[in-house]
Image (tube, rainbow, N blue to C red):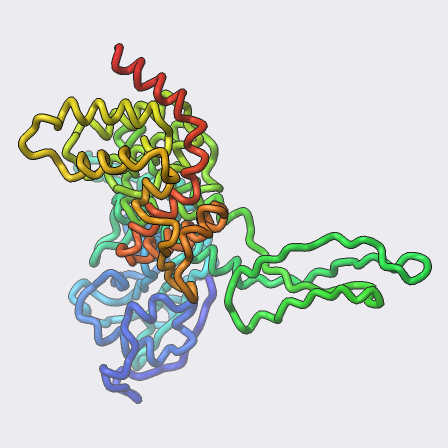
Length: 496
């Protein structure tokens, strides 16, 4: 814990207008708001109730009056602040918000290193960035603990702290293997929504930190051979990971007279990709069954943007594909290509359980891409259900038109219902991208798919249709190889 001792600021000395003071939430997010103790004190003394970013304690952090309950509720609050948006514990303030404070003698035995050791001993990873300081109002002293939102969140408790009350009842102050967050003026267990926020925030923090790491490396160039004729050179491909203009420009030289070239290389740790699998592992623990995805649409798109880094487990792929096709109406072909034909058939059947669902459109596109036999099978299924029905759903007529246009037209164009001469608007691209170009370059479509998935993850849900189109153009050409096997499995399901 970093300690700061501050001179007497005075309750009314140099008070800024309330409107000019930063909000408490903004101060809580700072690495160390004690760097400006006057502003911090003025802001804190304006607070009339405990809140998401503030907790009061009447006792000091350590001392004879500090019970097990007080000590570990302090720990719980600090962990909760670190797992949420940061926050403060001010000691010497009663529950009504009256600033009473302590004398010099009262706080002499408080060692910030002991506080840091106590908190770190109760959580993993250890809580770093903890700040301790003494605020002074007139002759009274107010110890303060602060932690910003942690870049290592979630912090999970490693101990269970409980005691037996005089009444005989057992009271638990800290649960083991728990993730605590801050809700209003209360510290409590994280909900699924909080887990979703933690994972998204943790991943963003880690990626931002990785992108700031710039490393300069020397790349040897081959010395010219005898007679001055240059030797063959290895071609080096470099992708720039950020548009940060403060990063030095990349320079590559072919000049045979230069013995070495210098390349600015931006490092991305493999740790960023582990985050995606951590999301899936937490989902596995929270979900009620193997096919449930509890984190919602935005997190799904984040995972799909970094789909190549998901651990290759068929159960995981099936869960994600089922989520996309049954609930989210989202891109999913990458997962399907890595599943057995039996699992693909199982997902198709699951979608068709509700034949009026809009999500049947995804099965229609999938069938077209899988080839003639799956297309025929689906057409028979839909005819059996809707041919004589007075009000068939729109996807029934849409699929009939798709089937009628085969095999003269590329199945990928049929699936996205566009021509090769059309184009797709990609946010951030200087011009619309021609569908014809993407048909001949699926890798480009895959790269753009990741980019647009990240845009959806950040809140622009209007781009979901573009993701579905790019999914077809990126992976549609590979689905045909699964067609016969999937058709066999669908037939087996019908026979069963």
